[in-house]
Length: 366
Image (cartoon, rainbow, N blue to C red; front, side, top):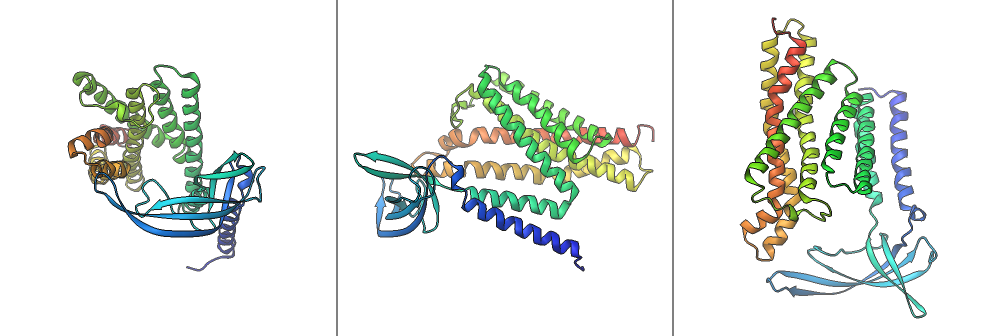
């Protein structure tokens, strides 16, 4: 494939934007209120073996770190600080020359000392975001740009919803997230697909699948009286834990149902465009076949995400002598329930999306 002058200029601009973003994020300490230390020298001490009360073996090393403050009233001042890290790096981190870390500055008498708070990661985060945006643009062009806009708007909307929840501090806050889920769906479909029949059919299928799966879940919880549901296991739950669980479940359920519904409806609309004479039954059966093909991979993706979220905590529980049943109950059970809820939503949306798309395209008498 021959590259045009426009392609060359576009590639050059992409590379230049990445370089500028990297350079800016390594020099943006002035944007932060908390002091940032750039490490200029590291002296590693002797490594010693350690064994805890549960017979877990590890290796521990002390570091003497020298660095210079990059911002704030202590800018350009040099400090030394001790750091201890383990080979497992479960609760600590090894630092290297050139890294930037957030620190806390303390005044002890006439001398100032510091302690390391956490590592500065904005460079990696923004470079990953840049890479995702560039790949979307290269692969999908205008559709990619619309997808980018929808992601950004949904992210902003989600932050607004969370802020409203915090500000209002109401008891029945689940409905805030339920309504926001509807807005997320409509906004995403309109931006990515456009305001047309396909958008309306997809929205109807998503709404039906999500609502029905949620109703089944709530009914099952009511009938079983939440037996075995340890909502107190939610991390940092400061509000009604059950409502937090249901709110998180709605967001996760919406994502999986939207994925399945969009695939099925898009496929059937494309089939109708390529074969205008195809009738209702053929469209419906084709939609079901598409659903059968994507259901397995989607459910496996849910399980993999669930495993990734609970893996580290589960290993910690196992390494501290807890049984499988206790570990599952307190680290995995809620995530597994959410995966099952999403699986129910996928199962329900396959026939509903196929039926709605076939009815809209094929007609019942054709």
